[in-house]
Image (tube, rainbow, N blue to C red; front, top):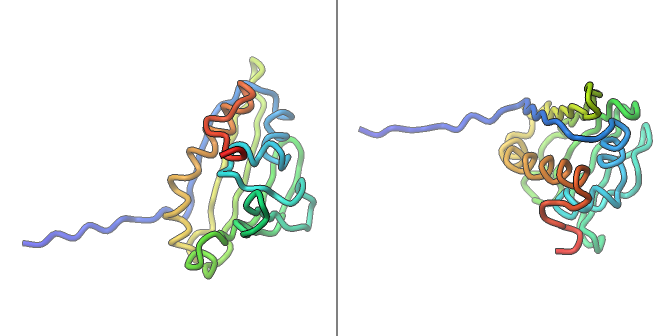
Length: 158
């Protein structure tokens, strides 16, 4: 008897965490390239996001494009929505652009709730499988950087 197990890829991935910081401080950490590079696998984004622009990331030496996506919505310090196309792998680069939504909600007691939704992954199943494990390290690194000033792994100097 042969048993086949298929792994179901989630086309909507939701991550939530609490960060001991104001929404403004969390916003800064998710939109300032010099902070992002420290926890986001060393991805160096071109510039802070601008409505209608592109959200592009490169290796620190600019030798390889890593991600690209349209900036869909910016509402500081509450909401940031952008497209996501992984360029660091040729197979992933052929898939459709997905979407990432960052929502920051202030909480009583001086902390924030951050919700990240990566959706529209129906046309990007390999990307969905690839990023499923990566988001938790990114978000844990963001939280640690904001709360302590140091990332879990400093990708910028690795």
